[in-house]
Length: 326
Image 1 (cartoon, rainbow, N blue to C red):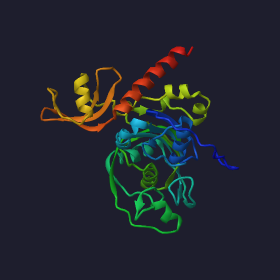
Image 2 (image 1 turned 180 degrees about the vertical axis):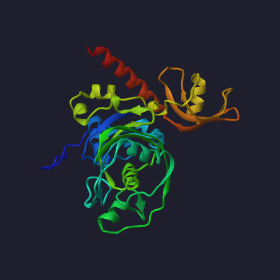
Image 3 (image 1 turned 45 degrees about the horizontal axis):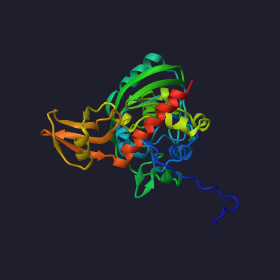
Image 4 (image 1 turned 90 degrees about the vertical axis):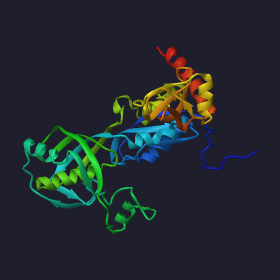
């Protein structure tokens, strides 16, 4: 019988878990480290996150387990929302508080001037990704080159800033509520606002508050999750279709559900749609995603029959836990 060597962690038996966890990522932890900690708590066989948050950022990090990982790209592509704190008058090598100070300048900025500067960035803009980012070049992240003192040419990318509202602040520190498209670098936005104001700036704090329709309101910390029983942790998971909440619904009978899961197209009177979420006859029998074109329902991302059954069992168990909770 194999034994555990001294200093080795006992092997944790994994299990099939399906759903979306809204995690409130703490300061100083990478997104992958947060994912691995949550995966261990759930003993999940399969897990992934829906977009990196820097270690210096906190807030909403949706984590996908099991069947939900098939739809993580939807959340990755969704618009984001942040609370960003800018410190004016100080520029750094990384455009955030972790870098070395490059320059200090006198600050004399009013709220009206800050509002006018922010307004210049609303809409589609071009951003040059920072060297201290996870973007890859020849298999290496840009931050690896930066740490080695190497500066590379980067092409500007188009992103969209939907809104910037001033939440509070004055003089040299301001907190902004930023709603933007995926791929927006808030550090770069902070640096560009400071440059426009003529005093320079860096991002001193960042908290993600929204990703698509998902918000920070219901997010849980790792500490809170760690204090729960396994059944309680399962009960706080959102269903995988939470990532597709704004897609039209298609519901099929038993025969149609079986054919859909087999990848067979079927005729429908529904109008064309780029994305639909498809269900079987049972209310929570989520089958996967598809699209409708020329009067046909066509599958694009399917759950396996085992995953569908697992979701139904998990849903029943969750109802029992909630019913037993005083």
